[in-house]
Length: 457
Image (tube, rainbow, N blue to C red; front, side, top):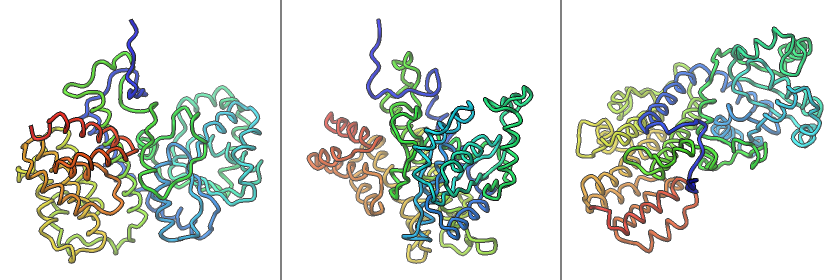
């Protein structure tokens, strides 16, 4: 008998069952730590790239999907801060069709006509995360030359070619190209001043793994190969295509993780993905704004120095990132508890809240506010379900809304406020207006729980 797969079900790249939430959370933490290390290595290259953009003023900057896509939003924000109305158009471009057609040694005329001819005569910067065999750079060189695009190419790291491609060369061929043709093209771009390959020896830059959190439709059929990078941070976070996610193969859909429904699991993973991508975006933006040596943020002069020491943070943004990682770890293990004074999140909250914001730098004020909002947002849940304390939940929603910044992407805090104060009509209208996932599903589930009487029970 065939089993109907629920409509919310999302196919996974992995063929079998889902990983535990704790394992996924650890993967996110590991990715953030790796990003921190690798950003230190590539920051000089990123700064050189944005300086070149500011000085040379290209018409467009295209980030090649998917490995470089997460760089697009923070670099666009940085450029807008520095160039204002002169900011070039920033887009992502999926070059898979061009690359694959070229490597089969087939005509690229149709791809050039559709993707590159509209850019004829324009100055365009292409940004890649890694240069290895050079196949993508060679294909771009061919396409832009054929279309008359004034192009420059930048790769943030360099790595050895894939072993499988190295093995191809021993056969006298590289994909569909002859060894002679490939070698000639490779030498051409390596000696071409329009190609900048930064000397950062990282074989698999963190941005490539981050692409699994922030992706275009993986089959490439439902979206244009070009994607404009918006000024709205929320639009740059995560594509909720039903073709991507952490759920298992269809034959295992009826075996959800212990203690969770698939909807709960899916919502939790999406929430983690959103927060990790947002954190990575802020980390990249901060790296671009990092002062030169000798001008770095002076922790010892800050009224929040004890908070920095507690989490071994070096900047206000890093304090927020490390706080978030600690918070998510406690939420995943169900140890988050505002009554436990030994938890790092509670110690940080006390330090931040007892410090006069007027004595902080503007950057510290912003991140202090974000951390305190996040603490109170989770305190609402703790009061509602761990302690069944309606009065505390009402107090925490008030404080969370005080700290939540204007145009903050989170819509659930306001919904909590309506529900814990029994404003059902307002809650229904607010939830009905939420269009983005996972908050749309989360809002519906919270409303359902409230109507069933499961709040404070």
